[in-house]
Amino acid sequence: MEILLHQLAKADTFLQIHYDDHLGAVVETGSNMKQFIDFIPLLIFFTVWAMDERSVTIGDVEHSVGGIFSAAEFLLAGSILVYGCLFAAQRRLDKFQWITVAAVVLFCIPTIIFRDTNFL
Image (cartoon, rainbow, N blue to C red; front, side, top):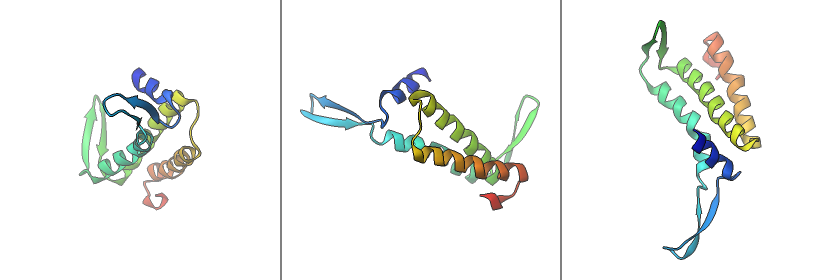
């Protein structure tokens, strides 16, 4: 985790430019990393949504995983985790990232509390 945070903090745009001796040219690396990181919560959402609903027991706690409500829970948790790590590493988020976090919180929390898909 510490290595990941260090790599995230290296550049605000995740774009690194260096000279590649093998190619003999200046090469850009990591330009798509930021876009990939932004899509991680969405990938988790669709993965959980596509799962058949099943019960998972950890200790004495039983929780059903799969379906739209569980996917909303994972989207909320994943977004807070991903954007929280980005904020901790960079000490800021882009405007688009703030809008994404606000929308996820605004729509997922009522969906989870009221068990109503009209909020999504």
